[in-house]
Image (tube, rainbow, N blue to C red; front, side):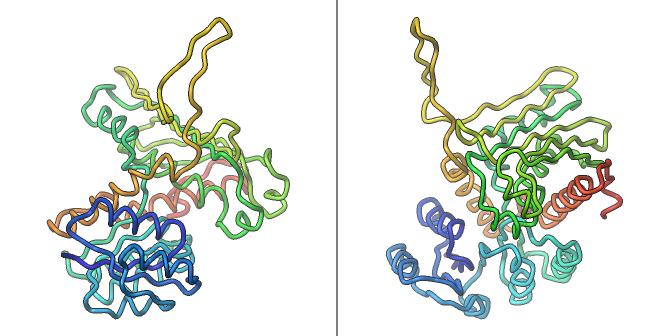
Length: 338
């Protein structure tokens, strides 16, 4: 039985703890650490059977009984804690992104090169584990749609974050769209070589005053010459809009939104159905569980992790290029950033 320590007891840390307890039978969560842990969270951890609760993440890093570290803390701590965990010989699952700084991501990559090959490091891009997107990817892999020519992704949040959050998030392209950049790479099986963004503030002027955008259309060129388009909005009146299509020389594969049911009611007044699931916890809860299960399987079986640190770097490179494009009003090649 593998022992897991979770660093970060916020929303995502709790989601992963619950997923492991419910679905994973080869590992257990024995410790959780967060400098801001509350009595309420500590009580919750006890009900989950988590024995060790601390405000110091080094208690987990230095605990020789812990095999795996899940980094679910704030983004600005990810790379530093990654380096500490790798140095301690722990397997690491790190929520996206590893960092917003390329130099610090490369420091993690360098540490992994020096670590034993059996040490596993995975980045948490949970959408790759969604049943809809996996089915689209499989259609592409199996050659059912022929040569990929166009990828289209719609990603719209049900409601905007606060302006305070926007100001410290790294910007929409490194906070929100980074998932979609990873999806373009995943669904197409290709690398992005150029990015052009058309950003706007259409939802909340305070987000613009904080120096960010709340809406954007991003176009990309892929290595083969294929194209990709992403549309983002921080507000969607009908719920969490998450759709993708890959169009190819022999056809297309497209995914629709998940809802509580697929029932449509048809009457003389019109045709009605369910709205999409409200937000990411409702839509991607099973994906969160699946990604951690597959990471632990890679640790147990000493196999390749589904999303490695290099994939984490590539998504950030695209995000930085998109941010540069928004500021300069021109297409930006990934090679300029890399």
